[in-house]
Image 1 (spheres, rainbow, N blue to C red):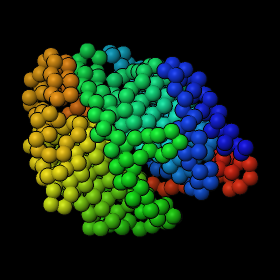
Image 2: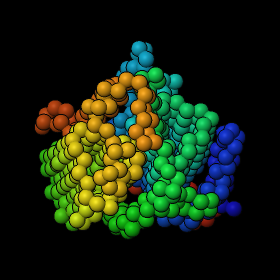
Image 3: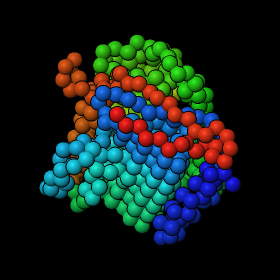
Image 4: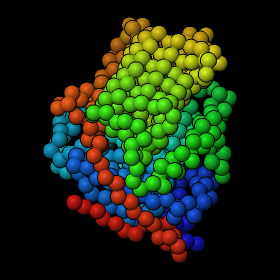
Length: 473
């Protein structure tokens, strides 16, 4: 048995100990899922800028194809083609507000990954747990393909493929495939596949569950097999384009990058694509015949194909937009899948919000009016009756609301205001409002970044394991 196999077994045992309740064995889902030779095939890399504190520490881990930015510590873990993006970590001296308290940080925050397996994951933002403001911890956790861990310390849990934990501290939980949770804190819970759940204390509670027969077509998971379904087919067909990008050490930008915009050299750009000022295109984003208007962004694992984003559009981690035209300030949430086709376009009016983990896969042309909230599974115009509401109407709700199988309880005005406030924060953080001098964000700070690669042991009993590395200023 190689050291990498021992490491994987050790992590499985630790996660299973945490998951005694709700009695879940992660082993059958992980063992043999990725051929061991893959872990020695791909290099890892980290980014250096003037804007992000530097400290990387890797010990007894495999990091194949993974990217790191900001302060990151990885111990006894297996990361495969994951993005650990610490460009929003809190800094020493900052004040972390929580429920009227002001918590000063005595150190820079660090992302710490320990005894965990992350497969093609995105880790971003910062810890929203007041008990650990200086440490964004992921421990004793297995997280499957294209899951997002966003501002969410996670311990002793299993995250299914295309799931998202967002601003939620998770202890000893199983999060099902394509489930999205933003509820503050979860412990010893099993969240069923396809559940979309947003809760803010007593203020509001939004919940929707995909029908099992619908979800199975798009993503499902079987023991001993990689995730299957339309989502996986979509990304697998474009996998070779990314391999070509990662094989080149230095490259020129394939298209013009205007003032204030940032296009990662680890993004794929094809066809007649164009980015405008203050646009952010992150690593592992995919553009093909795409137009991104001023201040828009395409974050990690986003695909924008044959589509036009008019301006100040947010495509959150994992969002996919195909044959669509989005008006100004349309938000497309985590891992959403919006697919029109030639002659069957999707148009979404300005100021609309596509909820995280929404599937719009059209059978006929569809135009959504401005200022609407969308969720669930939409194929045709008639589906809007049970999968959308105007933000104005939702803001008037104070109590309980049920539309189809979506249930909302609480203050609709606060829900709308909270969402819109967060979207403004995202635009500011990404540099959408940069005027040449003020309001710098990720797009401007990421324009000048250097990448350094690191490699594992190429053969022998340590094949695929990286040597202990400590990188400091």
